[in-house]
Image (tube, rainbow, N blue to C red; front, side, top):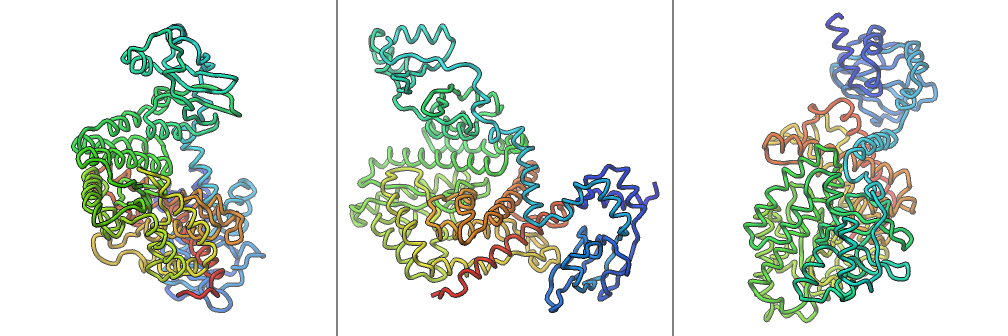
Length: 619
């Protein structure tokens, strides 16, 4: 094949939707293309006859009849407006924004292609959100075939559960377990699950305690054990077992026992030991032991990512391990300092609160203290406790917050009443800074201590935030300071200097605006959810967010998370420090198109919220 035709074929192989065509068809398609070169300022399209135009190099601006910029075409973008009589863009004018090389496919050839491949025509006419949602479905289908997030517990049940009555003797229960070759026995009374007994219980609660084996097995059972339904993802079971320090989980449906899943079942399905790492965190006797255990997290994360675990599952994994790490650091600190003088709740907010941590995350934590807290009597203790934990988290890989928004800062240690008054002040007498603080703290989640101290705070936010439009309007106004970089490939919103020159910050320009949009919708609806996906799903179809808009944002978030995950994988594999910066030219044509779709969706949703609150006075 001629070198130029081979180059065209290779180019089309990365341009959606043509990238799905076999190599032979791409080569034939390349022979039917016309090639045009446009000087900067030249009119577009370059021919009167209808063509599908693909930008090979350069850029073309399409302007609406009122002169406003409707769309900018860059490398691998296409325009088929001349082939679609009902296209709005057919009435727009175009000019080359810089010297440009174009490929044109005549209408006749295009119609033949669409006739042969109607599915490609449908994809070519998709809207931004539709394209991303289809990509999301494809990624989910691919990932779920390989990871625990797509494996349901029902698929791990290999035999009926072994059951017995709680009044069975311990000796008879042990004999039953031996005969059935199981390490756990479910105890059922009146058709309801009463408890569970494991091999460990037989050793520690019977033999070690000197309990007669004629005693009822119910006397050593764990009553009301945690359970999940059959349709729950296996990954959720893995996280629950890790958090609770258990190795067996009943599977329940309609109040009836369906089966029993063990950590061994999950590890066999997954092939890597998350549970083992969680157990070592829970048993670690020193900061050094915790640091050694957490030092294995990057390799574990990389293994899971290579196996196909998605960004959402990995974010929950890292967050759950960070929960366990924090809990153990608190236990070690209390063992050294003595019991806390008043009850407290350690809360995580930001990405940790949303359970969206990455390996490249700093600390977001605070302390809620009982109203009996007196700074003059108790302040020194909690200063030492919080400093010990925050320093320990930093030693184990979660860097200190550059802004000092951590529990070791006295400003982030308050009584429940003081936090209530602070939250009310942020909500009622808001300003740009208070709205930014609310955006961070209102994602909080209790991860250790007395959760009862935090429940009134959550209830206050859900009740008051929807009633005070000023806070929501200020949050919307704050999001406008982070506009979606629709023209990032033209360099004006990539870093212009420094270590990340020519690169785009996926977190700052992409993920953070989506988190902010989801948070505003949740606060406006009085929604208790803190995770971004949960918030969008819970508020879809309400006054401020259409179901289509919610699906678009979910798809956009998934794509950005997957793109960042892939970037982090590459950096980890190369032994380089993690960051969120990606050079657009390193992405495939397809990913660049999807990224432009993402930024288009973000801009649309930001504008929609702005219009909803434009008449609300911002303090």
